Image (cartoon, rainbow, N blue to C red; front, side):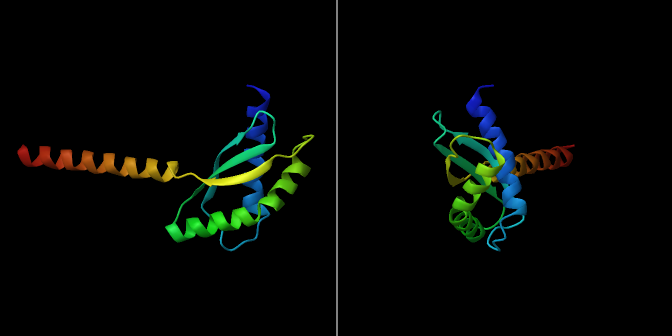
Length: 122
């Protein structure tokens, strides 16, 4: 694993901890997770992918809260992760977990309807 991936993984752990334990913004719901962190090769910028489980309004509010807390998160990362330069952090909404849940539900519904069809045909 190269250096940028190691730094991204460490930042992902720390940012997740910061969101859960340090940010006291009521707009951030309980079900928020950091799904990935992508750091540029020069370590100047980091894009943090966030998954928020909730309504569209809750997602917008959570992203607004995280955007306003990005300076705080950057300062915390600077203290926790030993880097010469702390990357500028931007947050992006990641709906891959919700998409996966939706696909899983569709598969389960299809399996149930197949079983029901088989049972009525027997």
